[in-house]
Image 1 (spheres, rainbow, N blue to C red):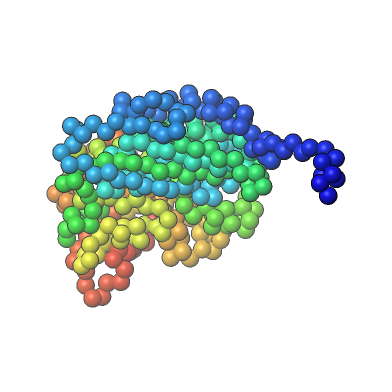
Image 2: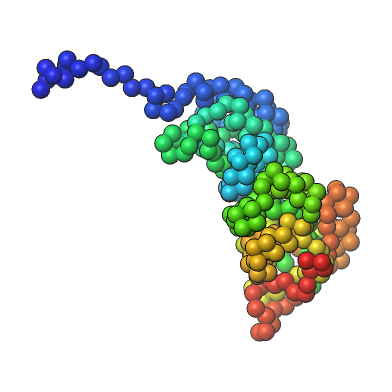
Length: 362
């Protein structure tokens, strides 16, 4: 037996033959470095390529700093990007999902680290993904402190990828926003979304592409552009706007409207004993929402617990601060309006937050 084995040709297996190219990974790092360098802050030490990212936390800026962290992904919006071969915008969505969760508690986003899983490292594609992440970080005012690109041959097809990221922010201990600050009589200010953002895409794709049979390249009159362009519209990033609002007005807390919809996410930032009503009549959802509802015969309740319905962020502010808050957001070109109010809960109330009335022209 030993003699037979010795006579067989020696096998020369390699990592590359197994589907992982170290050279392609190195090339991808070189291509993404310029984009990562655009998303920085003075506190960042070193550059991309080390084993860990370093960020000098200048403690003299805070009396009692509290770190906040958040992790998220983009979801099946990535399927649209892959189908259209457009990869430089979903990174903005990724940053938005992370940093706007951080700012809900009043935290200033400091830095973000991404994780990109691919079937095969295609250096130009990875660079495009990081370009979008870099742009999102610039919009949010945070640094891109590094990350990981992992090649998964055999688990993912060559062109497939997925994105996730973790962000870290900081807020003064005595300035942490949350349910404990909310009071009866507080008002709700809605901030308009840029569209679907990054939630509900499994249902949206099912309705528009499969049931409606609308091609991604097809022009849709109601949108004034192609379906693909509508679906890839980047998520609005509110982090800087929310921090500016906190600096100018008495904000109790924020609610980032993501998966679960408007009422469910607002309920997360309300204390027991209080109830919020949101008036549908104060805004009109964008045409993409009505098209999904009509083409898919999707019930209103299902729409409202799946999509943001045109509201990406809600600020809960003291009633006497409402006008000031609206002025601050308007000056920053954020679509905003009085959305509802907070009042004491009664035995007749249902969920902690609920939508009432009807949308105009929806």
